[in-house]
Image (cartoon, rainbow, N blue to C red):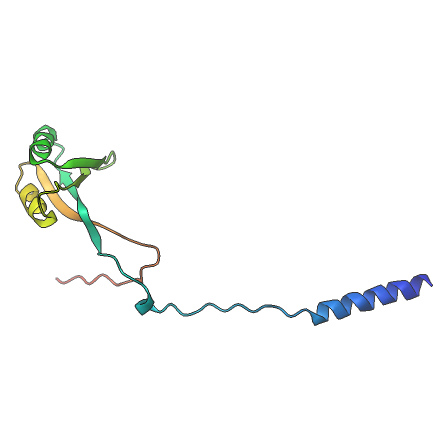
Amino acid sequence: MKYSISILLLLSTMTFLMACKTKKTSLQPLILENYKYEPEHSQHVFLLMYDAKVGKEHIMKTIKEYGCEIIYEYNSINGMALKKPNDKSLEETMSFFKKVSGVISVEYDHIIRLTDPVRPKVVFN
């Protein structure tokens, strides 16, 4: 009797397991046309790098006079993220700061999303 219950239980379990269908999930291909792309860079924020030997006092004064807002000041590099004034365009503001004494570079604040496709960087010599 003991064995018949064990066998019956074993057969029931096997039947149950065989009756279960595994739900197959397949990854759908990424169709890039379905995604809405935002601009490649921030429309209001840009990055400014300055020469540490010259210092940032003059640059800080210029930032205040021009009406920019400091979004972030980097500790590991001599740079900061600045928000342009509302009454000026991003390109106009960036052009102005490229001419300021002590500024090494002015760049767009690029937006990088994890869902972006990988694009090779083309370098021309």
